[in-house]
Image 1 (tube, helix red, strand yellow):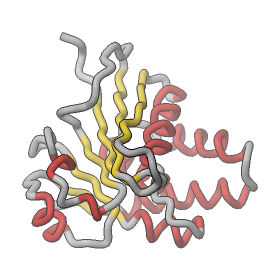
Image 2 (cartoon, rainbow, N blue to C red):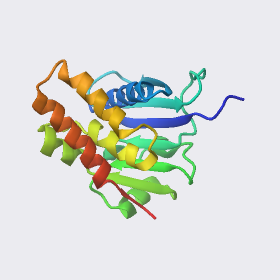
Image 3 (cartoon, rainbow, N blue to C red):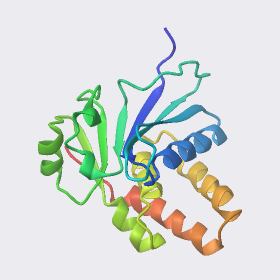
Image 4 (cartoon, rainbow, N blue to C red):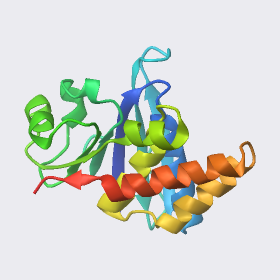
Amino acid sequence: MPEKYFEIRWHGRAGQGAKSASQFLTEAAEESGKYSTSFPEYGAERTGAPMKAFNRIADVPIRLRSDIETPDVVCVIDDTLLKNPEITSGLKEDKLLLVNTTRSIEEVRKLTKFKGKIGLVPATEIALEELGRPIPNTAMIGALIRATDIVPMDAVKQRIRAAFARKFSEAVVQANIRALERGYQEVKFSE
């Protein structure tokens, strides 16, 4: 049996940044000395279609290449997907459901019927305020780091600088770092 990997399943809609968040997290994990994989799963490949992305992060080489069925964390980028039972499939009650939403914990619990720990972050609102666009993935990564500490914040900031500085202005780099930090600060958890 392989060592336990830390497994994350992302749920979103195509075009919202779930695939990019997953890839970005893998790159930051690798740059911080960990092993990591990232891969997406699409249904109909069109903007707005539900899709999933996956991460495995470990201190040992990762040899498993299958979908993640029992994640440590489920990250939901689009709260309109919360009624889909696939969201909490395989998510045990001692694990975390992390949702981009302005809904209350009670509303999320009612929609998902998940009895475990829930984390909520208004990632879309943060993105609109910081980036001027509704792309919540950077804020979601910040919330995920706060919840798990799976990747050091400094590694993610370095990855943002490296990835965005090549294509965008310093203002865009700084806006993404602010979104990351706000996601980290503004996430709230159930008891």
